[in-house]
Image (spheres, one colour):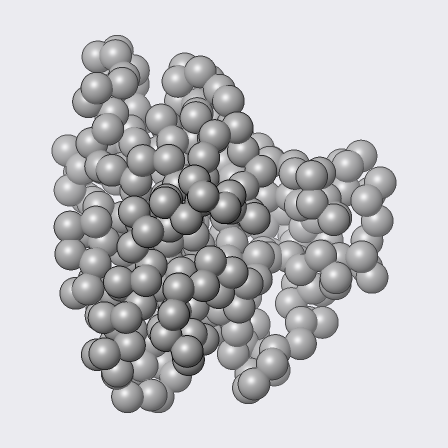
Length: 280
């Protein structure tokens, strides 16, 4: 049966950077900069599969209908070169109308990237053209909500919920699935050693020897500034937002942007999780 290694995060938390790191390690045999190397790691669900089992109208009329096709699309997924695939995802690990997002039959492991919600608020607001207060309302939402993107070939639906719900859903969901949680800020601080932790985690699951030179190459050619400069010159093919995709990438940007009341609201809402993760 096909097995998936999920690369998951709340939007604007470093998922694309992680895809570059992993794609460069496993798929860049020529060892040269390739902006499109992350096409080796597709976004879930796959457009070509969704066209076969759903319709644009069904998803646009009621985006929550996507839940009917989560497991079905994983059943139909064809994995090239073996029975494991890395898949990008922003969905919460949730169940809607008794339809689970995934389960142990299809999921081999997960890599979850978590980022300080105070910085996520800013990056999310810039990308989706929201005010900071609107962005905070999204991240603190008491209910599930969806993002619907109709700019691509087929409607793309992502079911989110609050920052806390999203993080804890991947932390605690599918209990027997091996998981590693990496802080975005730790990747910024020491990308090599934190990416080494991820490769070590994967090597135990997939049974391969760690290639330290390939880790160095992956870190160098997935460098944020390199990706940012390339986007300014040539654009970025995945950018559907209202600003540059690789906009800042820094940590603690919130200190210069958010009001005291905005910071207090976020810290109160996510106090337990932020303390556990070392953000406060």
